[in-house]
Amino acid sequence: MSTVKDPAKLPARTTHISVGTIFLLCLGYNLWAVSIGWWNSILGWHAMRQCQTALSVYWLLHGGSWVAYETPVLGAPWSLPLEFPLYQWTVAVAVKLFSTPLDQTGRMISLLYFYLTFAPAYYLLRQLRVRRCYTLVFFAMLLVSPQYVFWSRTFMIESAALFLAMCYLAGVARYLESRGRLAAVFAAVSGMLAGAVKVTTFVPFCIASAPLVLARARRFRFQPSDIARVAVPFFVIPASGTLAWTYYAEAQRAANPLAGFLTSLGLTSWFFGTVAQRINGELWHALVNDTIPDAIGNCWVWVGGMIALCIAPQRWRHACVCLALFASSELIFSNLWINHNYYAYANSLFLVAALGFAVVSLLERPDRRRYLGLALFVSATIVAANAHYRRCFLAQEQNVTSALALDLKAMTQPDDVLLVYGLDWDSKLPYYANRRALMDPGNRAFDKPEMRAALDNLKGYHVGAAVFCNDARAMPALIGQAQRAFHLRPSGLPGDCDVYLAAARDPTDSP
Image (tube, rainbow, N blue to C red; front, top):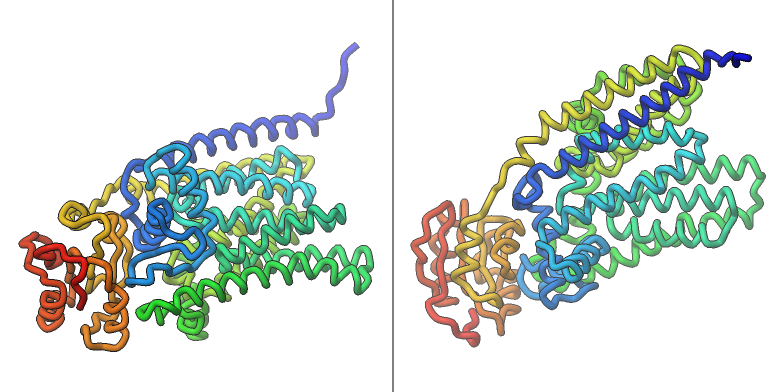
């Protein structure tokens, strides 16, 4: 007796096997791609930000405070906290436990946070009734996204902030489903940490929680007490924790006379940008030429996604919400997204998810449209992997070194301070020299009030060398002041910077 198989189930089974195979291929590509340049220095793209984070970890490991942590580039007091240092703590603990190199440990921890993000993402997709097999569509596209392949392997806080924000959103969804107190506590703590680690990453996820709460409130007719019970853990506590850390960090930075540009008021315009940036094409140029290609390979892939949603529209609401969340970060923090392409790490996930819903909308159909979904899925992953190879591969292969930093490390003592002009407050030189530094972004003379205060704070420290780069090399009066104040002599080192070394060590010397 023969059994007649439903012909509609054969494509489904084939589709599931195909999706799993493509996911495994994407995972293999990701593991290979992140390994490229693994043992290189972190002096690649946005090296200033990578070295700033690494410098803080270095001084955590060498006696610095673990809360008011040091980023010693603007002189004493050395504490210049910006983000809550959860990522830095994780890296420091890993270095202590496993005695691994700092650069590579920072890369590994960043990558692990990225992979951990898949856990809350899986829960959220299942809450949206995405089949287990089809969750692999989203994960595969994340694994080959140029944005997530490249920046997940850097010494930066981005993946840690994304993981915490995803945990927050998953906690919100879990509470709305179960009303469990543990879920509310989990969401509140995750949200508080996410906001303190990186508020610009947390904002779109906080926005994303609003439609979840409103949909649940409308369905179950929440009473005022229910609304308060939701608002406190999901909005009030995360916002309060973020503000508390912000005020604490700013109070620490205010003690440094050269850190005036790091106040909240001073950073506001840098964070939000101008109206002109949003309407004169600058933002849209960055979106089309950088953000979208970094996320999904190119803009044409999304055209295929829109066609897919027209053919199989059952997931169009999910895709549109993801697109709105993707756009929210760009519109709120426009200047950051224009000037720093790694900031899109926070919201590119939503663009990838929107494309994922377009693919899944086809795969869920009980007819030949599944094959169109597979075709779009394969095309999207190939385009993204190719874009990573074209845009990022050479940058990962390059191993940039700093001969000047190595020379200064050899010519000065571990507790010496470097006086640096002409390099803004770039942490690359202090990090690879393993020295604290007084770097003046304003190239101010010693008799200026802020510089006078900064030099007074150096009493008790020994300035082992002074470095003058770029425009500061052509400031003889300033160089003369440094030579007289710290008894410096020309080092004769060749290069793009002029280096002056202390003639003799005398800890009692002061300017």
